[in-house]
Each structure stands twice: as C-alpha cells, then as structure tokens.
Length: 139
Image 1: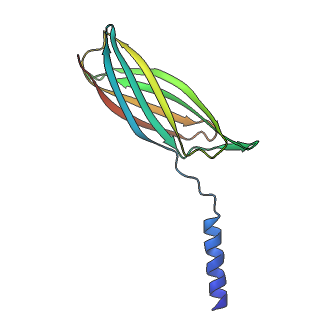
Image 2: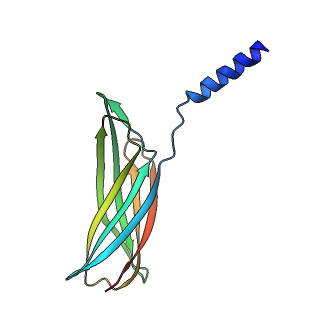
Image 3: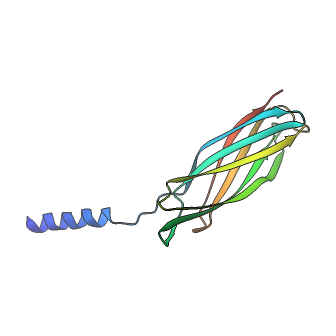
C-alpha cells in the first residue's frame, strides 16, 4: 500500500511540475471603422496568448510579429494592409498581449461588410496563429 501511495505521489508531482506548453492562440478579435471626410479609419485589435517568453535579468520578454489582410464585400483581397512587431518586456510573466492596427481607408472603399484577418507569429518559437473579425463601412 505504501508503494502505491508513493508511486501516486510521484506521478502527481511529476505531472504538476511538467513544462507543458500552452497553445499559441489569438482571441477577442474586434474591428470597427468610422467615417472621415476622405474615407474611413479602421481600428482593429486581437489578443495573443500562449506565446514563448524569454526570461533574463529579471525580465520576461515576448516578441510577436503580425500582418493583416483585408477582404472587401466583393471578395477582393488586400494583403499586408497592416504589419508590425510587438516587443514587450515586463517584470512579471505576461499573460496575453494586444495587437492593434489603425488603418486609413480612402474613399475608393465602398460601403458594405469587410473582413480583416490577423496573421501572428511568435518570433521566439516560430508558431503561428490567425483570427479574423468583421466590420461594416457605412455612411
């Protein structure tokens, strides 16, 4: 009986101390556009979690890169309409990171329902994820 308890305790300890990697994923995608004199301004965000963090010198550092594609109501695709990097350092381990894009759309964009897709890469592991959001351009 003692061997079974000891074995069970060892298994629980081993499981609790395992370094299982959380899945890299995007969530809470949101987008909206508001009308301006010469077109629209699009604001889009998405949050990332499960990314790798480098710990050195008492700081946690995460590095993400992204591109965003825009699809029009008639199916036309604008690739890389926005891109950038998110380099964040913190004294505490980061839980998630926001990725934000602010894009000016000129008057050639017509009213209707659009889709913006974020493609994000964790630069420390090479893992990738994507997520989209819909928004409407209206006068």
